[in-house]
Amino acid sequence: MGFLDRDHSIAPPGFNRWLVPPAALAVHLCIGQAYATSVYKTALVKHFGASLTEVGVIFSIAIVMLGLSAAVMGTWVDTNGPRKAMFTSAMFWAGGFLIGSVGIFTRQLWLVYLGYGVVGGIGLGIGYISPVSTLIKWFPDRPGLATGMAIMGFGGGALIASPVSQALLKAYDPNSGAQGWVASGDAVGKLFLTLAVVYLAYMLFGAFTVRVPADGWRPAGFDPSKVKAAKLVTTENVSAKNAIKTRQFWLVWVALFCNVTAGIGILEQAAPMIQDFFRQADGKSLVSAGVAAGFVGLLSIGNMSGRFAWSATSDVTGRKRIYMVYLGVGAVLYTVLALAGSSATALYVVLAFVIISFYGGGFATVPAYLRDLFGTFQVGAIHGRLLTAWSAAGVAGPLIVNSILDAQGKPGQLNAVSYQPALLTMVALLVIGFVANLLVKPVDARFHESRPERHESHHGGLK
Image 1 (cartoon, helix red, strand yellow):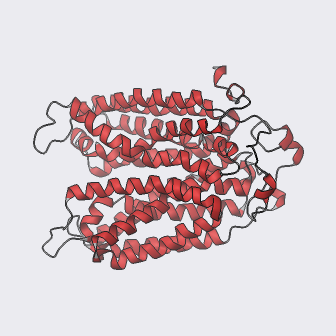
Image 2 (image 1 turned 120 degrees about the horizontal axis):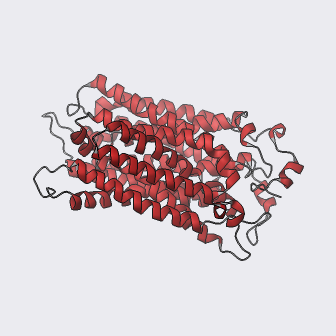
């Protein structure tokens, strides 16, 4: 397996760095399928005779494993390079679908937990961080743009996976034309097998085409001294081991946690939320189920476009300022949504779209933020440790929103006022994140790697 080693993926002289983002995007578009689990959620509930909560645990396990595997494997990813990491991610991600399909065919829900949740979740975590540090090294002049190009794929993966999965389920189920049709378990099992093969092939394409820059490489015309002019941007390097000892790491962790928790607050309830906001006194909603589904698709576009647009904008504004927008402006928009969102459908949709774009932008901007603070030496490993904030938010967000809504009434009987406590709780979280981000300052020199170690390192440190 030596062909997977970092040394075998070093780019030759004259290599076009713009060939690297498509390789990274290949992985993120595949693992972005995680946002499309709602397509077959009802089918699994019927097939296993389980509750929505029991089936929803599949997604929760996957997100928790994403954060944990990214944290644990981050240093390994940085040390061994993107090719081996992307290959490993492909094996786990495809393997998760294969194990999950066995669980579906044999009606063993625990195997779906193990397959898609645990094994697939490990693939999610390794795949998510695998191209990040490489892209930052290829684009030291535009790190926000670089990470945005790849990470937007995770936000947009569902835009491809959702319609494709729906079409395959109809093709695999002979009863798909029946009124009130719900896909059979057999169709979902076959869907899992198909996705395993397709995703494996596409992710391996990314793994075998990715390249890392040679030591000392810089883009033409790039002057590191200009980067140094920005207050928070360092040309020093901090190891992953030392990074978690700094207050900067934990301040950014809090900022990301608050931003993600607030975003999940809308994503978790997207379809029923818009219907409840415009529910009339007689219990009927002005928003149909079809329109609500379209709204979910629109939020996916906001999630994806925010990951690219806001992250690229951060190259101009700086990472700290753009996080002030995510958290500060986000708090204002959440307040307006809670108090006046039900006054007009257009206002509600615009507010939700922008808020979710901030959610996506926070994910895409944070690797560049870490690069600014800690350098490129082990930024992938640091990023992996920071993604534990995502795992925590994946549990906290739904728990906060669902527990508050449960206290307000039963599904189908809620209205805009019912959501106000939950949304205003998110406002409080965003304010906490805003304060944490304001406190971020340059990392103290005592945490920097010594110059001789940096020259001897082959992990991508600047020379």
